[in-house]
Image 1 (cartoon, rainbow, N blue to C red):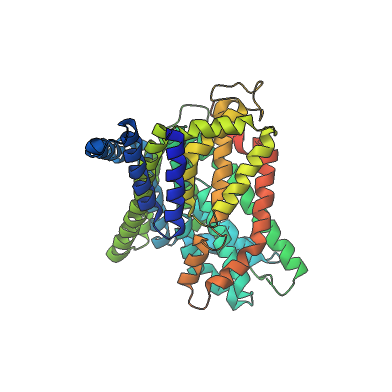
Image 2 (image 1 turned 90 degrees about the vertical axis):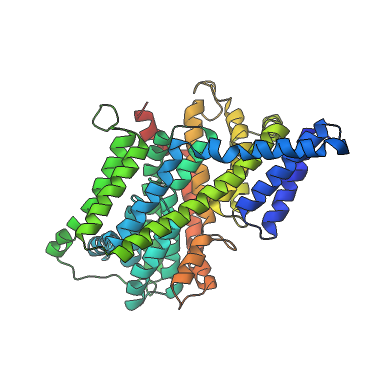
Length: 467
């Protein structure tokens, strides 16, 4: 049996494991190990006497993956970004953000829901975890919306959808993972997420206002705040603005000089600033302990998925499945843009059955080379490319598109993790309530993705400034 055939069989085995409920980390590691054993044993002609040797080589090959890949300095961004989010919560920054957004925006139709979206966008700028964002605002924003008569399903949907913005707005753990898998510059990818993330928040806000105008009982406006009260709410949001500026300056210095350092250093300094602010606000030892433990749990979960999937990726390299898929994609008699749209639609379907990080880690080793081949290759110039951009910019553009698809998958049934988190935090809500509430946001996400595909400059403006 040829290596490509082995690759297809093992990939099918992996999908069966995932569909039957095995965790992605363990399913990918097991499938990768089985595939490596199969590949090496096939090279020995399936000689029973040499099976043990094939197994030994496979285990050694797989065993080298966790340390060689996860020791990458770029991955140290993930725990610092997550820690910033949890410390910001215990420092009271989330409440301050929500209060500021409420005082300035709540007068609009559906204003409290729009305030929630903008507050989650602000919190996303200091948190790399969508799940944490949804959990925090389920406690803060939903009670306020319900208290003035919001539909509970709609309120829950706003929080679940708003939480997805943390996947795109830096610091973003998923963007870092994408950069590691495809071996692209982390800093440029983080820069690329700012404008599309803010763009997504604006589209969410516009959708909410439109719904509130048409269905007047869905989200009544909140009035009565004076200009003095509005300006008095701004100082509470200043630490978040400071952290965002620091991260930007450690990725790309907008003042025209070299960046102040690496994104890793920026994340660490940002976490330290929020920690000091939390201490100033009276954070207790139990709260600090909880923040550290939750950061450790989420980081370990992400790293475990990375370890398992990278073993599978190592097997894919031996099977040459990525190369075969790229050749097949480029041989199709369809325009590259149509093929790209089909790939994005496939992500939408796949996201109904897999979590966002696992989905990207499993598919990118095969899909990314195919997309780059569609554009003309890693070294193609913008003039000779299919999508009108060079190889580096195409990698960044595609990264933002797939991360936006990952956001979409966080609210799609039946897996939609953010929906389960919101329902878990609120005892008065069922998962079905939350899924019903997020339905209008599917339209907003579809519009956002279509605009990012049609106008790549939305994504590439900031990375192009960084050179």
